[in-house]
Length: 264
Image (cartoon, rainbow, N blue to C red; front, side, top):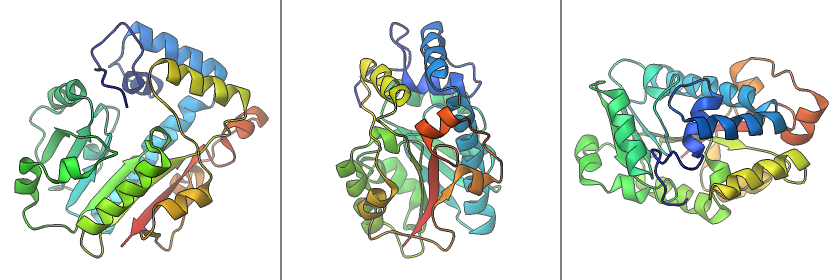
Protein backbone atom coordinates (compact mmCIF):
# COMPACT_ATOMS: atom_id res chain seq x y z
CA UNK A 1 0.00 0.00 0.00
CA UNK A 2 1.74 3.17 -1.16
CA UNK A 3 2.22 6.20 1.06
CA UNK A 4 -0.29 8.56 -0.58
CA UNK A 5 -2.92 10.63 1.14
CA UNK A 6 -6.62 10.98 0.59
CA UNK A 7 -6.46 14.78 0.09
CA UNK A 8 -4.22 14.54 -2.99
CA UNK A 9 -6.64 15.53 -5.75
CA UNK A 10 -4.08 15.08 -8.54
CA UNK A 11 -4.57 11.30 -8.77
CA UNK A 12 -7.52 8.98 -8.11
CA UNK A 13 -7.65 7.50 -4.62
CA UNK A 14 -9.01 4.00 -3.96
CA UNK A 15 -10.79 5.05 -0.77
CA UNK A 16 -12.49 8.03 -2.41
CA UNK A 17 -13.47 5.92 -5.43
CA UNK A 18 -15.03 3.42 -3.03
CA UNK A 19 -16.99 6.24 -1.40
CA UNK A 20 -18.16 7.44 -4.83
CA UNK A 21 -19.26 3.97 -5.96
CA UNK A 22 -21.21 3.63 -2.72
CA UNK A 23 -23.01 6.89 -3.50
CA UNK A 24 -21.07 9.07 -1.06
CA UNK A 25 -19.85 12.65 -1.39
CA UNK A 26 -16.31 12.47 0.02
CA UNK A 27 -14.58 12.32 -3.37
CA UNK A 28 -13.13 14.50 -6.12
CA UNK A 29 -13.84 14.79 -9.84
CA UNK A 30 -10.77 12.72 -10.67
CA UNK A 31 -12.16 9.91 -8.49
CA UNK A 32 -15.56 10.11 -10.15
CA UNK A 33 -13.95 9.84 -13.60
CA UNK A 34 -11.97 6.78 -12.52
CA UNK A 35 -15.09 5.35 -10.87
CA UNK A 36 -17.12 5.84 -14.03
CA UNK A 37 -14.43 4.09 -16.03
CA UNK A 38 -14.57 1.14 -13.65
CA UNK A 39 -18.38 1.06 -13.78
CA UNK A 40 -18.24 0.97 -17.57
CA UNK A 41 -15.92 -2.03 -17.41
CA UNK A 42 -17.76 -3.77 -14.54
CA UNK A 43 -21.36 -2.55 -14.35
CA UNK A 44 -22.10 -4.91 -11.48
CA UNK A 45 -19.33 -3.53 -9.24
CA UNK A 46 -21.30 -0.69 -7.58
CA UNK A 47 -24.08 -3.13 -6.68
CA UNK A 48 -21.49 -5.57 -5.32
CA UNK A 49 -20.00 -2.81 -3.20
CA UNK A 50 -23.40 -1.80 -1.81
CA UNK A 51 -24.15 -5.46 -1.05
CA UNK A 52 -20.82 -5.64 0.79
CA UNK A 53 -21.68 -2.57 2.87
CA UNK A 54 -25.14 -3.95 3.75
CA UNK A 55 -23.44 -7.19 4.80
CA UNK A 56 -21.01 -5.17 6.94
CA UNK A 57 -23.96 -3.60 8.75
CA UNK A 58 -25.32 -7.11 9.30
CA UNK A 59 -21.93 -8.09 10.74
CA UNK A 60 -22.05 -5.15 13.16
CA UNK A 61 -25.51 -6.09 14.41
CA UNK A 62 -24.75 -9.81 14.63
CA UNK A 63 -21.47 -9.40 16.50
CA UNK A 64 -22.91 -7.02 19.08
CA UNK A 65 -26.61 -7.84 19.41
CA UNK A 66 -26.51 -11.61 18.92
CA UNK A 67 -22.97 -12.66 19.84
CA UNK A 68 -22.46 -10.19 22.67
CA UNK A 69 -19.17 -8.58 21.66
CA UNK A 70 -18.65 -5.20 23.32
CA UNK A 71 -15.61 -4.24 21.24
CA UNK A 72 -15.04 -4.32 17.47
CA UNK A 73 -11.62 -3.61 15.98
CA UNK A 74 -11.91 -2.80 12.28
CA UNK A 75 -8.91 -2.74 9.95
CA UNK A 76 -8.51 -0.74 6.72
CA UNK A 77 -11.65 1.17 7.62
CA UNK A 78 -11.44 3.93 5.02
CA UNK A 79 -13.84 6.82 5.42
CA UNK A 80 -16.50 6.14 8.09
CA UNK A 81 -19.31 7.19 5.76
CA UNK A 82 -22.30 5.52 4.11
CA UNK A 83 -23.54 3.47 7.08
CA UNK A 84 -20.26 2.16 8.43
CA UNK A 85 -19.97 -0.20 11.45
CA UNK A 86 -20.62 2.36 14.19
CA UNK A 87 -24.08 3.12 12.79
CA UNK A 88 -25.36 -0.45 13.24
CA UNK A 89 -23.91 -1.76 16.52
CA UNK A 90 -25.64 -2.25 19.86
CA UNK A 91 -25.59 0.80 22.15
CA UNK A 92 -22.43 1.11 24.21
CA UNK A 93 -20.22 -0.84 21.80
CA UNK A 94 -16.62 0.34 21.51
CA UNK A 95 -15.44 0.69 17.91
CA UNK A 96 -11.78 1.04 16.97
CA UNK A 97 -11.31 2.03 13.32
CA UNK A 98 -7.91 2.13 11.61
CA UNK A 99 -6.31 3.02 8.30
CA UNK A 100 -2.75 3.22 6.99
CA UNK A 101 -3.19 6.77 5.63
CA UNK A 102 -2.82 9.41 8.38
CA UNK A 103 -4.87 11.93 6.44
CA UNK A 104 -7.72 9.42 6.06
CA UNK A 105 -7.57 8.98 9.83
CA UNK A 106 -7.76 12.72 10.47
CA UNK A 107 -10.56 13.10 7.94
CA UNK A 108 -12.35 10.14 9.51
CA UNK A 109 -12.06 11.70 12.97
CA UNK A 110 -13.57 14.90 11.59
CA UNK A 111 -16.48 12.96 10.09
CA UNK A 112 -17.07 11.06 13.33
CA UNK A 113 -16.92 14.18 15.45
CA UNK A 114 -17.78 13.42 19.06
CA UNK A 115 -19.48 10.08 18.33
CA UNK A 116 -19.20 8.25 21.68
CA UNK A 117 -17.07 5.10 22.04
CA UNK A 118 -15.68 5.37 18.51
CA UNK A 119 -11.93 5.80 17.95
CA UNK A 120 -9.78 6.09 14.84
CA UNK A 121 -6.05 5.35 14.70
CA UNK A 122 -3.37 5.01 12.07
CA UNK A 123 -2.21 1.45 11.42
CA UNK A 124 -1.47 -0.83 8.47
CA UNK A 125 -3.99 -3.69 8.21
CA UNK A 126 -1.16 -5.95 7.07
CA UNK A 127 0.54 -5.48 10.44
CA UNK A 128 -2.24 -5.54 13.05
CA UNK A 129 0.31 -5.54 15.86
CA UNK A 130 0.84 -1.82 15.08
CA UNK A 131 -2.69 -1.07 16.22
CA UNK A 132 -2.91 -3.58 19.06
CA UNK A 133 0.31 -2.29 20.63
CA UNK A 134 -0.59 1.41 20.49
CA UNK A 135 -0.65 2.86 23.99
CA UNK A 136 -4.09 4.42 23.38
CA UNK A 137 -5.56 1.08 22.29
CA UNK A 138 -3.97 -0.73 25.23
CA UNK A 139 -5.57 1.85 27.53
CA UNK A 140 -9.00 1.50 25.86
CA UNK A 141 -9.00 -2.29 25.99
CA UNK A 142 -7.32 -2.86 29.33
CA UNK A 143 -7.14 -6.61 29.86
CA UNK A 144 -10.01 -7.35 27.47
CA UNK A 145 -8.94 -9.61 24.62
CA UNK A 146 -12.38 -11.08 23.93
CA UNK A 147 -12.99 -8.93 20.89
CA UNK A 148 -14.32 -9.11 17.34
CA UNK A 149 -11.96 -8.20 14.51
CA UNK A 150 -13.23 -7.11 11.11
CA UNK A 151 -11.40 -7.33 7.76
CA UNK A 152 -14.10 -6.47 5.24
CA UNK A 153 -13.43 -5.89 1.55
CA UNK A 154 -9.67 -5.50 1.91
CA UNK A 155 -8.42 -8.99 0.96
CA UNK A 156 -7.67 -8.07 -2.63
CA UNK A 157 -5.14 -5.49 -1.38
CA UNK A 158 -3.33 -8.15 0.69
CA UNK A 159 -0.82 -10.76 -0.44
CA UNK A 160 -1.03 -14.37 0.72
CA UNK A 161 1.82 -13.65 3.15
CA UNK A 162 -0.07 -10.65 4.54
CA UNK A 163 -3.21 -12.69 5.25
CA UNK A 164 -1.26 -15.51 6.89
CA UNK A 165 0.58 -13.01 9.12
CA UNK A 166 -2.65 -11.25 10.12
CA UNK A 167 -4.34 -14.52 10.99
CA UNK A 168 -1.49 -15.66 13.22
CA UNK A 169 -1.04 -12.32 15.03
CA UNK A 170 -4.74 -11.95 15.80
CA UNK A 171 -5.08 -15.59 16.85
CA UNK A 172 -2.14 -15.39 19.24
CA UNK A 173 -3.26 -12.04 20.71
CA UNK A 174 -6.95 -12.78 21.31
CA UNK A 175 -8.79 -14.85 23.90
CA UNK A 176 -10.66 -18.05 23.14
CA UNK A 177 -14.09 -17.21 21.77
CA UNK A 178 -12.89 -14.18 19.84
CA UNK A 179 -14.06 -13.74 16.26
CA UNK A 180 -12.59 -12.55 12.98
CA UNK A 181 -15.23 -11.42 10.49
CA UNK A 182 -13.62 -11.56 7.05
CA UNK A 183 -14.93 -10.81 3.59
CA UNK A 184 -12.99 -12.39 0.74
CA UNK A 185 -13.51 -10.70 -2.60
CA UNK A 186 -13.33 -13.00 -5.61
CA UNK A 187 -12.84 -12.30 -9.28
CA UNK A 188 -11.45 -13.94 -12.37
CA UNK A 189 -8.14 -12.20 -13.23
CA UNK A 190 -8.26 -13.82 -16.67
CA UNK A 191 -11.46 -11.95 -17.50
CA UNK A 192 -10.60 -8.89 -19.67
CA UNK A 193 -12.76 -6.53 -17.60
CA UNK A 194 -11.20 -7.69 -14.32
CA UNK A 195 -7.73 -7.48 -15.89
CA UNK A 196 -8.43 -3.88 -16.89
CA UNK A 197 -9.74 -3.19 -13.40
CA UNK A 198 -6.47 -4.52 -11.97
CA UNK A 199 -4.52 -2.30 -14.36
CA UNK A 200 -6.47 0.84 -13.36
CA UNK A 201 -5.60 0.23 -9.72
CA UNK A 202 -2.00 -0.60 -10.60
CA UNK A 203 -1.73 2.81 -12.25
CA UNK A 204 -2.92 4.32 -8.95
CA UNK A 205 -0.19 2.41 -7.13
CA UNK A 206 -2.47 -0.31 -5.74
CA UNK A 207 -1.69 -3.98 -6.45
CA UNK A 208 -4.77 -6.21 -6.43
CA UNK A 209 -4.65 -9.89 -5.45
CA UNK A 210 -7.26 -12.54 -6.23
CA UNK A 211 -7.15 -16.08 -4.83
CA UNK A 212 -9.39 -19.16 -4.77
CA UNK A 213 -11.49 -19.76 -1.67
CA UNK A 214 -9.62 -22.98 -0.83
CA UNK A 215 -6.31 -21.10 -0.73
CA UNK A 216 -7.79 -18.53 1.66
CA UNK A 217 -9.01 -21.26 4.02
CA UNK A 218 -5.45 -22.50 4.38
CA UNK A 219 -4.01 -19.03 4.91
CA UNK A 220 -6.24 -18.18 7.88
CA UNK A 221 -5.54 -21.33 9.90
CA UNK A 222 -5.72 -22.01 12.85
CA UNK A 223 -8.87 -19.85 12.71
CA UNK A 224 -11.83 -21.88 11.41
CA UNK A 225 -15.24 -21.00 10.05
CA UNK A 226 -18.18 -21.19 12.46
CA UNK A 227 -21.27 -23.29 11.76
CA UNK A 228 -22.51 -20.80 9.16
CA UNK A 229 -19.48 -21.40 6.96
CA UNK A 230 -18.48 -19.30 3.99
CA UNK A 231 -21.46 -17.47 2.52
CA UNK A 232 -21.87 -15.35 -0.60
CA UNK A 233 -23.29 -11.87 -0.21
CA UNK A 234 -26.63 -13.14 -1.48
CA UNK A 235 -26.70 -15.85 1.16
CA UNK A 236 -25.44 -13.46 3.82
CA UNK A 237 -27.89 -10.64 3.38
CA UNK A 238 -30.77 -12.46 1.74
CA UNK A 239 -30.85 -10.17 -1.28
CA UNK A 240 -30.77 -11.51 -4.80
CA UNK A 241 -27.85 -10.11 -6.76
CA UNK A 242 -29.21 -9.99 -10.29
CA UNK A 243 -26.20 -10.77 -12.43
CA UNK A 244 -25.79 -10.89 -16.18
CA UNK A 245 -23.69 -13.51 -17.95
CA UNK A 246 -20.87 -10.96 -18.19
CA UNK A 247 -21.13 -10.28 -14.43
CA UNK A 248 -20.86 -14.00 -13.73
CA UNK A 249 -17.72 -14.30 -15.86
CA UNK A 250 -16.03 -11.58 -13.83
CA UNK A 251 -17.40 -12.07 -10.32
CA UNK A 252 -18.85 -15.60 -10.17
CA UNK A 253 -22.19 -16.32 -8.59
CA UNK A 254 -23.26 -14.75 -5.32
CA UNK A 255 -22.21 -11.14 -5.73
CA UNK A 256 -18.44 -11.12 -5.89
CA UNK A 257 -17.20 -12.69 -2.69
CA UNK A 258 -17.68 -14.66 0.51
CA UNK A 259 -18.08 -13.60 4.10
CA UNK A 260 -17.19 -15.71 7.09
CA UNK A 261 -17.07 -15.59 10.87
CA UNK A 262 -13.75 -17.17 11.78
CA UNK A 263 -13.62 -18.35 15.38
CA UNK A 264 -10.92 -19.38 17.83
